[in-house]
Image (cartoon, rainbow, N blue to C red; front, side, top):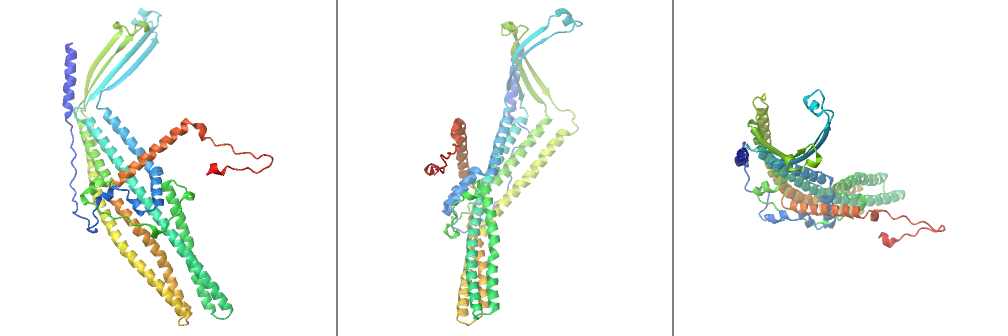
Length: 515
């Protein structure tokens, strides 16, 4: 009884000593934060916009549709979500080592000992039977904090993986918006190129007719022909760009190209409000910065886990059960067995392996410290670049519109002078050939101006990513419910047999049911 009390006292004492943990505790490194962004106007301060589904402010239901489909179907997001689930399981595994491990075992056997041994001689030819049922427990006392540091590392790794998933959501939504706006750009460019080519072709046909009647020279016909061809050569490349962009959007969203809704024109979209946010909030809102800091926390905890290997490991174990050579006697009082034990083990000489492990963990922490500092610097640079890009593209768009308007006036006046006989067709050709590439370029600048807002929100991060996460979780639940319904009613998923023709009559389909 005294031995049992001494053992229990040792257990309690050891448990009370597990409050300390070797290795450094984490403190966020100091990184200088600017007071304000350089390229931001005073009115752009409504940080509540960072928590909203800001892409709906384009007021384009098609874009909202594609973003929702990407959140539900994107393969990259499915991969990063699986990584989160794996990291969560790793945390559970690490945390489980903090608590006693309970197990059970059962054993039955039959054997015959050699007659040339004392046991065999005593038993004769009679076989030996054994039955045993045991419940065992084991516990490694975390006296030096090794397991707690490992758990701390796993928890930080989980948060880093969650941040990586949020970063993936931000990237996917940004890619969907950018690709969609580029598709609208190619649609506008294609329309401009086709209409211009059709107009030039009519001019060429008119010149050919006038040449046949001797009213214009062959050179003017050739000029009209070259003008038409210069417009036609733009069309295949624009068409190819549109095809590639649509395929990219299909991959991002999981929506087949043939199911794409009819797109709006670029000029029909509204421009969402721009928000700059507060510089200090960037460290709390941007996923890649959060990920870098959590990875640094994990590396910091790994140093403690590595240093704990310098110290002895203490574990306790015990067992309680029944053992008998007769099955009917197994669970009776005399068959009861028990045992308990303590174990201590520690390093003496490992040829520098433990020290090398500590140095490796410290080197990893230094590398991730530099990575965190780089992530912070990059984040501020990204925001500043995005805000600057927004201002400059607005100025570029204003200048580009003015340029196109002036070239349209130039083309109109050149045509009027040519019709009046005051100038040759070369002047008209020069004006119109200058106009077409600028019209096509204007569509590209419009797209960049609309996309510059998305780049600002993507650079800032914010609560809008959490809104997308909520939408993602809802989509996952809907998919899981649909899968359950399929398993519960397999007969409903079977395709109905096609109707067979009777007496050679054509098959009549139930169009109402199909619709």
